[in-house]
Every structure is written in C-alpha cells, then in structure tokens.
Image (cartoon, rainbow, N blue to C red):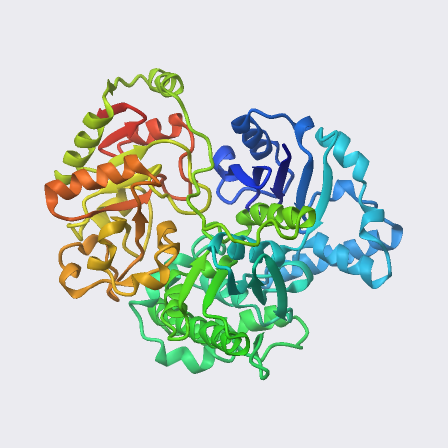
Length: 579
C-alpha cells in the first residue's frame, strides 16, 4: 500500500491524499481557515485534515507531489547573486501591483534564473531540512509543472481514451498561460504554449474584472453574468487588440506582446478604452472576445490533431459560457472540464504526474470522475455539540422524514440549508453543502442576494435529476459528464423557461448540476420528493455561504447561518431545524 500526498501551496492552497492510485481525501485551506482563497504558505491545516480523514500520519507518506510555484522559499539555498536579483524582482513586483499587473510567481522566476545559469534546482532545494521540518520522514518529494498538473487532472478524469487537452489561466511556470496537448491511452504530450507577457487570456479577463470594481480571482463570474445584459459591439474591436490568436494559430497573442511592461500597458489600454461605457457593455465585449479567441484556438488545435473530445482545465475554464461555446463546436463530440479548475486542483494533477513516474501505463484506460465528495464529514455527536454550543434545539428525524420535511419546506417557499456527508472539493456546492429553494419564483434571486449579502448577476444554478436533463436543456449529450459538476451552461428549452425562472439567465441559459442516484442518493431523494410535490425535477442550489466567506465546512458554520437567519430551515445530518 502506497500513500501519496499532493500539495498546492500559495494562493488557493490544498492537499490531497491518494492510496495507491485512488484519491481518498482532498480539502482546500480556505474551508478550514475560513479565509477566502487562503494560501501563501505550506499550511498544516489541509495536510493534517486529509491525513485525519484517512487515519494516517505524516510518517506513513511514501511520496510527496509538489508544485514549483509558490513553494516556501525557506527550503531553498539563496546564493548571493540570487538574493540581489530577488530584491530587484520584489521592487518590480511592487511597481506592477500599483499598475494593475498580476505579480509573477517568485519561485517560478527563481527556477528560471537557476536554469539560465546552468544551476541545478535539486542542488538548491534543502530536501532534508524540508522533510525533517515537516515530519515526512520516509517520503520522496518530487516537483511538477503548473500546467502539466492542470493538463493531467483534466485528461485523466475526463475518462477519454484520447482527447485534446487545453489549459488556460493567468500564468504558471515560465510565464505560461496556455498549453495545448494530446492525451492518448495514458500518455500526455504538450504541443503548444503561450508564454508571452501581454498575451494571457486569464490576465485579460482579470484586468477587466478589476477595472469594473470587482476582485480578481474571485468575482470573474460576475462579469460573465453582466455580459449577457450588455452589447459587445461598442468595444469589441478595441478589446480585440488586447487578446487574439497568434499568426500561427496555435497560441495567444496581443498587440502588447514585446512591449516593456506588457501587462501594465494592456491594463492601462483597457482602462482608457472603458471610459464612458456601461459595465454591461464592457463585460459583454470582454466575454465575446474571450469566447471568440479561445474557441478559434481550440478549433485550430482540433483541426491539427484530428481529436474529437476536449478536456479543459485552468482558471479561464471556470467561465461556463466559454465552455458551452466550445461544446457547441460541430467538430466536438464531448467536452470535460476538471471541476477544481483553479490552482486548488493542481494538488490532484501533481499526484497523477507522480503516479505516471511510477508506472507509465497505470492511467492508460482513463477513469471518468465519479464525484468530488472528498472532504470532511461529521457525525451526530459533532453536530449535536455545535447545536448545544449555539443554544439551538433540533429534531432528530429518520432519513425518510428529513427528505419529506425538506421537500415540503422548499415547495412552501422556504430556503433550506442542506449539510450532508463529505464536503465537496472545488468551487461548487454540489448538494452536500448547499442552500436549496424552489426554482419557480424569479424574485428569489434578489431576496437571496440580500439575505446572503451577495451581489450576483447570474441566477442561481439548478440541481437537476439527471434522468430529466434532456427534457429541460439543449445540448446535454456533449457535456453530460462534466455537467454533473456544474461546469457548463446549456440553453434552456423554451417550454421550461417560464416554469423555472429563478435558475434561467437573461440569455436563456442555465448552469445545471446533473444529479445521479448512484452518486448522491440522498440528494437525489430530496430533489425527487420536491418533484413529486411540484412536477418540477430540479431545485435551486446555491453554495452554503454568505458574502466573501468560503463554503461552510463544519457544523458550527452551518448552525451559525441558521441562527443568523440566512436560511429558514437547516437539515444537518439527521437533525432538522426550522425558524
């Protein structure tokens, strides 16, 4: 029996634990620290939690799968020439922050400078100090590339025997912001990259997000929502100068590539271009440019490789409308988006790369992702303790009674906090840490936003009985698997738009989670119970959190939401409470 621990350190830190080739536990730091997108260090929180879930200790770990980027620099030798360069880099970083540029990853720069001088990364890594300091007495550590980790997560869990693999984000090792590669029977080959400053699609969208007054790497979804309310034409041609496909057709480009301070120049260009335009039109132009450019890039790569299936990963593919555009391409047979598409998910990809080190044939047959319920669960005693601490009483119900009570509450117009089983890994609440409501009242969006201190511009998502998906949405067949993880939008059929207005956007799309009985039987049961009452085989599902807080993880957080009247009812384990 072999145990492999994967770690994503820095921004969006996470830890995952594999037993042999099976993922058994995964959690991001933010769910434990309660700080959104937490990171910047090697956190004991996530490491200790995945070990606790598996009943293991640090001295039982055989391998460590690590990422170069953001790794704690206390475990590296700093030569005199490196220290001086670091000081210069830090000065440039401060200046870039003031100009709106995303700072480059310090360790990534460190690795490149070592290579430029013919120096060995391994010789500078204080391996023994790291292993002793962190308590991994028998583990063998290996480092892996940022975008290779993205690629493996998408390729392996797509279940495709062969596919095109496209990764895209702000940037990673070597300033790479995009890769295109192929996956064939367990072997990944990277073919094209974008590594030019001023050409990153992720930073393009982040710049627009920030210039609209939102927080980058957090509120890009609001721009997606606003885009449907505006017109792209007034700014489209101008924004198209800031992101385009290269002349070769295999990478990204812009008119700012090659300029000194390319990202700062692009940011200032966008800032000036936006003056006098509504935020809806700005969003619409940015979204249209992103979609057109990425779709063209993907289409070119499919023509080059002859692939019919596409696996996607990286922060840009959190953009569910973009993913729909890719799925709608006539040459695409099927599309899959890795659910933890931000850097959080790279801890998973790093372990997959480690597995291939041990056995290149191990992942040959693919393994369609079944679920992401890899986080902590809590028993009745822990829940009761949280109730006692809050001074709240609750009924202890049978599962049948709990399901019926929750379904009737939703049908009656109440908001139900639904806290069951193991927490989800990734950004979406998929029925274990969710707030549920009926999808029939369009006004519920404003009501929920006010109650949760949110300012969302997209409707809340529906959780749909998988067996009814084709009745409600167009185009499900191409993305049936990935839609189980709420990573893509579909056009809603005309006859359903008026029946479920709370989960349909102004452009007629919805971002569903397809719920299968065999994957989450209890969640399937509560939706089925609501279906029997209402004739509607779906419920509104939004993440169980309030403004700027991570999704709830432990019972005290869920109970607090009930006490603060964020929800009308709370189903937490077998316990039921109602205001």
